Amino acid sequence: MEKKSKRSVSLMTMMFLFFIVISADFQGCFSAASQTPIKGESNTPANDRVGSSVFFRVTGNVYPTGYYSVILNIGNPPKAFDFDIDTGSDLTWVQCDAPCKGCTKPRDKLYKPKNNLVPCSNSICKAVSTGENYHCDAPDDQCDYEIEYADLGSSIGVLLSDSFPLRLTNGTLLQPKMAIGCGYDQKHLGPHAPPDTAGILGLGRGKVSILSQLRALGITQNVVGHCFGRVRGGFLFFGDQPFPSPGITWTPMLRGSSDTLYSSGPAELLFGGKPTGIKGLQLIFDSGSSYTYFNAQVYQSLLNLVRKDLAGKPLKDAPEKELAVCWKTAKPIKSILDIKSYFKPLTISFMNAKNVQLQLAPEDYLIITKDGNVCLGILNGSEQQLGNFNVIGDIFMQDRVVIYDNEKQQIGWFPANCDRPPQP
Image 1 (spheres, helix red, strand yellow):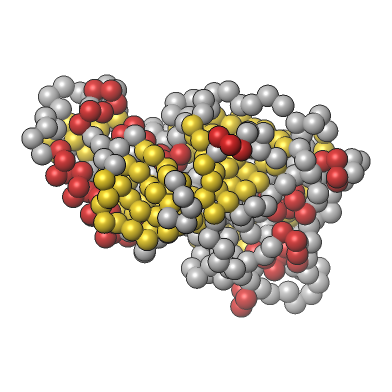
Image 2 (cartoon, one colour):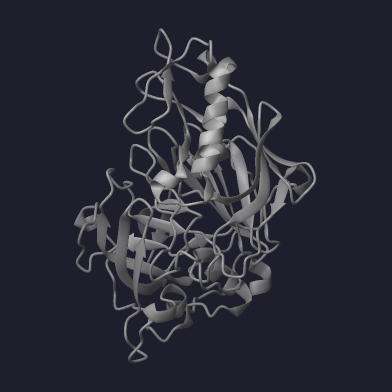
């Protein structure tokens, strides 16, 4: 999912590969077992590598930055590019000097293609351009793509392949070749500026995802995890998760045959530990969304509960430009500790497994703004063209390791210090 603006608002919600990638019905899915990867080089047997992982340092925050990013090296010699981390989309693309229209980076910071186009006859092209959108008049023709995002941003480009230098935790240094998008035409029609990154790192479940390509090459398991801190970034990893499973809360992924998003449910919403009557929620875990989005009915029901509970407390409505539901006190609020006692915790209780809950303290759904107000970090998804979808964004995932295990079809989480990635 493409992210929000640099100021972190309601922009980026769910990135669905709406167009040519996947339709709004999420048509077309590809299992890891059936993938034909771009050929890469490696001198280490696959069986020695697939049990390892690779870690990256993450920068950013929910507010005020509005997104989390990671630096990856591409090419030989390698060049560093920063990417918006998005588990809600599949294709990884980078702003590309082909030349580039609508790019936000100076020309010397753009990716320069080197006659490394992916032909349209490659099966991974069919994964990007499905159904009527797939055209391949000659086997060597280039593979075109177009992606539209919920924040009214888009990217048009071509697929190419290049090497990604990776050092695994077992000490192996590899340079696998993988397919990425060369985005030469970017548009940003929404009300907010795009994220200040060179591109999007697509970590969804589809065939074109970097995760699926690494798995098909036998380099890492099809597992991704992240730990997003409230202030100073965190870490991201691909492959084997190095954490003891008994400490992790797991919920099964929904197994829709054509769904490339990380979905789970049904779930019930509790407020202050008590049932709200809101049940049957299906939820999408999306690192490409700063905030959490509920459909209009759920959002309004929750907002009514919060407002009712705040009656008689020293808070007054103070809506801001980018966050509609905010409150102020007699003095500017400096810390969540100043007002935490006024708000009750939320709990998402998953009904497909026993005692599986995502427990959310007030700091997990509230934002203290630069104006000294406290704002609700839960937004109305129906106002963001998300329809009936419910999206768990970064704000709900702060100070937790969240693991998307495509091998076992499950999503897990546990509280953690995101400043300290585990040592191999």
